[in-house]
Amino acid sequence: KQSRLLLEKRKTTALKIKKIKAAKMLQKIARGAILRKSTHIKNAVSIQIQRKWRQHSELNRYKALLNATVEIQASWRRKSARKKALRMKLSVILLQTVFRCKKGKKCFDTIRSAAIAIQRLWRGYHDRTTNMQILIKNIPFQPKYEKVLLGLIAFQAMFRASQGREGIEVMHFAGTEIQKIWRGKMKRAVMVSLISTKLDLAATSIQKTWRSYCCEINFILTVVLSLKVQALVRGYFTRSKMRLQHDSATCVQAIFRGSSARNSTNAVAKSAAKKIQRLAKAYIAHKKVEEKIKVLQNFARVLIRKKKLRNLKLAILKLQSQHRGNAVRSKRSKKVRIAAKRVLEANARASEQPHMKLSKRTGVALLTLLTSTRLAEIMRAVQVLEISTRLSEKCCFKFAEAGAADVLYELMRTCNRSLPHVELLQLVLLTLQNVAFFSHLIYSIATNSSIEILIDLTQMFRDKEIVFCSAIRLINKICSIRNELLIQCGREENVKRLKGIYSISVRKSKITTTRKTSATTTRKPPAAAARKTSKRSVRSRKSMTSAIGASNDTDMQIAITTLEHILAIIEKLPTR
Image (cartoon, rainbow, N blue to C red; front, side, top):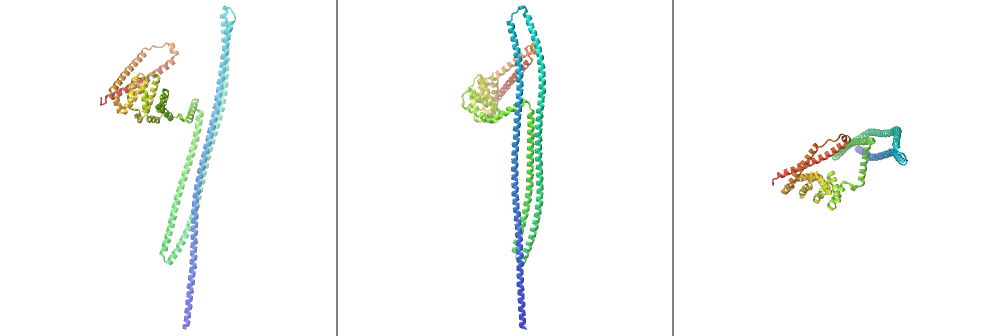
């Protein structure tokens, strides 16, 4: 019995051991299958993520290339359109020049033929009269028939002249009627051709802009629809991908939780949780980046559309302005055409000759003024300086930098009362006045020797009104800007000289006013016949003389008042 019990125990223990081994083997096989399945799912998910990321990067690269190609195409088309417009403009200008040349030649031929006809008639008349006089002188006749013969000749001449005038009037009337009909026909034909060509050009330009606008709208609609389709497809793919990721993540979590529960290891659970959190955060961040990229894409597309519309508007405006300019140029008068031609010729001359620019001419004039000693060269240089300082502030600044005021003052000292020197003085004073017009450049003119030189000029040339008035103006400006020069002007010698000049000029102005009043009161009225014949010439001369005299009187009155003002300021000085 005991041996049987021991055998049965041994058998049961062997069966239990076999069962445990079989169970362990089954567990090992099941766990291996589960792990292989989980690794396969993980590999599939990682491959899907890599594929989607590469697809996204390639799509971005393709979009960048597409934008670059679109920009290149737009710039090329813009360049070709500009070339075409320039070609059209040059051809239109050439046609205009040919037509105008033809019209001018025709007008010249008509004038020439009319002049030849007039010369022919006049020469015939002159030859007839001379031949008749020679014939009268050579034929011998009695003196009692001389008056009769002369009367007959005069009567014949009058009769023939009346017949010739009637024939010429008839021919002139017929010629004018024919010319009027022919010119009307030619003008109508030209106007019809011009209107048809302009209408064709306007219609083609409008059709071109409208078709380009329709094509752009169709392209924008196709792009928007394709973007919507792409968004739907991408949404479907992302949703399916999210389902797969969600399923795989739940499967991984279940496997991981089972393994962690079986092995009861907290470290593995923590690392898995961290991995899941990291993956979730990365997914959320990727989603946010995608949303931001979509917003930026929408904004960029709106900007591109606005830019295209702006370029289209500018192109339409350029075409409109070109068409209106052509219309206005075709309707402008002959004087305006000649003025425009002169402006174009002047611009071309300025671009071909850069040495004739104002800045370079001023530089050359300053250099000649500082170095030359010839009167003709100095006169030309001062003329250039007067023009440049009158027209440009930069030239005035160059004048002040070069210190040309001292040279001009020294030049004024050497001048006498001859006509060339008077003209030179006028130009010098005008240049100084032009520089003194700018308040920050008056200091370059207000030198230490300027007051004495200007007072000498006023005393020497008090009968020359232009020199006198400009010198007084310069003294006023210089004294108002520097107190030292005002004190220098307030010396006893200078005050005596200024007072003498003031008294002489006042006396002279009174004498001229009294002479004018006496001349107006004692003027005799002209005869009736002379008034009828020379009415317009007398009026024009009166207006010109009165205008010149009034301007000179006003300049002298202003100069006298400024001199009185300077003397009043000098009297108020504390040193006096």
